[in-house]
Image (cartoon, rainbow, N blue to C red; front, side):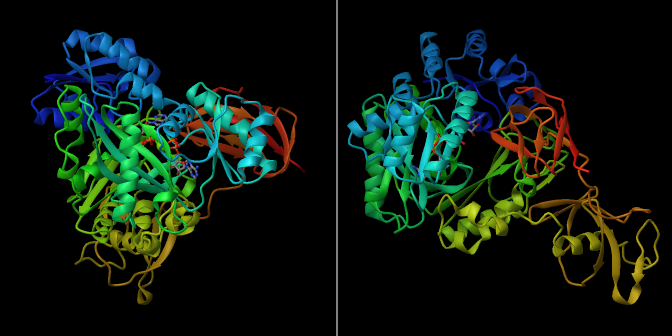
Length: 618
Ligand code: ADP
Ligand code: ADP
Ligand code: MG
């Protein structure tokens, strides 16, 4: 059995693994980058080794340094978590070649499933139903266009080496194909160093259904039922649940058996997930669920499976890596209740979900549910890594129960000054269509206006802010100084500043007391700076654009569509910036001419950095 473990990852998953290791009496070794020195996952491990500077390539992806750290600390095994090196077959081989135990899938299984086209070919051979499409070697533009036409639109172009929702383009008609192909290839090369693509029929009313599987070194494979991860934004999971709504027993049996068959076909050992895409236009039906890809690692959303099965999946991984047989047989596993997970991200829904980085000066998670987080108050969300702050996980007797609890928890999240999607999560979890189980991967986009909190403070926020600036009872609330002043006492109207803008609020008597901290108000998962109106505050919103095209977040300039002297029209795309898993296109705010270029393609820019200057038409 493993008695010491090096965890080659960071944040919440490193802490998650440490927790199980501690319970099993296993000594843990954390590896970390220079900027992660003071993070909780480092402190909680028995030992820690700094393996390099902040950029992941120089630390968390630095195989040499990680193996060296394992040797130096006498670790017996390496757990890669998810992301980073978890699906890197060469690394898995190096780990075992160094005499260490790899707590992950065998290198051969990772390779078999690593590229989406090869994996699908293998699954076809194994008799697993796969999404119809084109998997050919011929990558010529004309050939791909012809194949797409033959498949019939909409078509999905996917990078064969893709992952994390990147390198994918939906194409709705032949005319859009070549532009989408170019953009998909550009992203694929940048993110995965491989520009090859495959084509898939775009499934309408798509639901993402995945099955947790485990294999041991004795040839046994079991499944731990399905998860539904259809609530996605830009192909990235936001809310996951288990079991899947509307899944009947025979459909479950069929999809779970297909997953077991897929795992067997690659002699799978350890934890893995088989992802399927379902056409749910007529409910979930066994003959409309197709293999999409396999993730040969522990999944971000594994806690919902833990909740409904009562098993510790990291413990299973450790047992299987040590060569033990599966701890339970298929018939010993069953589903208990319903579980849901929401990913709390450092991003701002009202600016199109731009990442929000910085120090978590205030951070408070709700009580009463499982919270898997890598950060504590005072830690920093940096632009170097994934912007996930936490996973909130609820478990209830029924789906409604789990949803209600998770919605309440999301609404109770307090984070400042980093922006989060907490209010967006709460609104999604409370949405009547979500509650009715009417989910598919287009849900978020379709309901965006209901789900994204308005940029202006709601009446509830204004009421709470107004109440919060009221002086304590016993004082004359209508005449106290310090900026607060009644306009017309009879109407109980007071002035208050929220989010930098001044408002007049007619105060209602009812309403619960607001949660506030140092001039910040927390309501329904939203966070607003508030206070008495500043003297001389002029009001009004931001002025007109001065023509400076500014980076809204730190990142890399991946495309410049214009050059100095070019004439541009309002709304025309000028540049594309990439940061933290997303591309952001910057467009011209008015008609004019590019009077100055401040950056070259591929340049790194800081938040607020000027990319170019436009001069408006007279
Ligand atoms: P899962 O399939 O487990 O639900 P994802 O597909 O979102 O999760 O990716 C797994 C993890 O891999 C992410 O949480 C993230 O840490 C990492 N990851 C995925 N894509 C990227 C990327 N482009 N850059 C950095 N990390 C990534
Ligand atoms: P990744 O490796 O980035 O996770 P996947 O192949 O798993 O890529 O696809 C990610 C998401 O894209 C899926 O969860 C689903 O929402 C959507 N998707 C993938 N393939 C299809 C398809 N053929 N039709 C419709 N949606 C799809
Ligand atoms: Mg996937």
